Image (cartoon, rainbow, N blue to C red; front, side):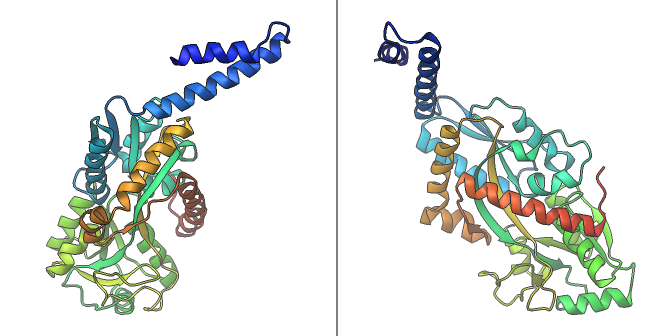
Length: 341
């Protein structure tokens, strides 16, 4: 029986000949909506699905979502592609998803910066992050405090002492205004009375090149983007800004162990849908992504090998993470005085 025939049959049941017209219409519409939304979720997807990454290709979130997209293509039997739309600190690509049809066929794969920090960094942000539909938090990683090998400091304490002795000499690079490196080092400047100079770059890839060549002295980054440079000695890690040591670089102390417990910095990769996307579709995408992200072979080859931790949250869990982190960043950004522009 087709959906239209089912709806007509329900109408005959719930709307007997002598029933009140208004109540009959309301009840019939309620049943119709339930049948329609369930059918939409059951038939999703029936055509190409796009993940928009608001950063250049080759970054951590781009690599993980491309691997997941291939798995979804196999699972769904329909093409799933990744499109990079870069610019304005990730807000251009994020806004493109925000304004896309709320049908689940255009999704956002991004880092926390565009969701939790952006509201405090832009006066005229074109989208409202709180209205995006959380799908799943895929992976998470604490950030290393990275230095060029020529920086004469072996740990975070030595770095702080060095910068105090030689103010205005040492620089740090970021991959955009309000990105994790700027937030971490400006907070360190604020707490320790330092004068590290900020040099922004257009993305993580040019920043890492600048670090390797010694154009800048310091930055932050996860094992996913800096791991190979740490292994080859092109960069060194002074600390990891989390509560536990890295499984890949266990000799690097945490910021808490180094005496700077107030410094925490992590990056996560999450998937979001446009505002108003039916919850049934969100739940389907979330469930299928979580099944992929927690599969042992995928974890081993696409996540753990990059120094990342699989999380695979539910939509509600991601919503809670976004709410808590947004509140925390409101305090941090206010303390370091980065004004919205």
